Amino acid sequence: MNKSYRQGQILKLIRSRRIHTQEELAQALKEIGIHATQVTLSRDIRELGLAKTPEGYRQITPESAGPDFQFLAAEFVQDVRVAQNLMVLKTSPGNANTVAAALDREQWPEIVGTVAGDDTILVILPDSATAQQLRARVLELLEVGG
Image (cartoon, rainbow, N blue to C red; front, side):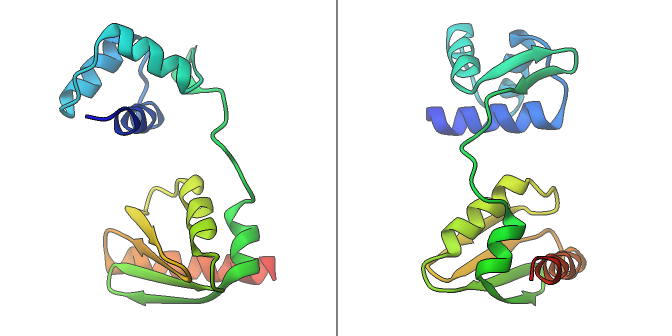
């Protein structure tokens, strides 16, 4: 298990439920097959910029941010297509990665994942209906941004 994966799972856990102690965090990680010592968890918590709040651990240090998805979509997205549970965003050449990273930062719960090439982003969704809804949402953002 590599450090990046473990830290990504920690962020996913603290965003999805309340975790108040390192022991709870260790147990939650163990439930998903990740074993980590207290020393490792302490280091991960520090490196991720997590702090204890009344709601549990939260990330205080913002992740490396950039322009938001709406701004980048308005600037670079040229087409939005749906094929069953997949949505494809076509961008101008060389911009798919930047747009996909901004979309990932949005943390929209309906998005399972994204894959970006040079000018194409594949957005994976759980089903066809969700793909159609997300397409409508993206098109709405493009109208507002344009």
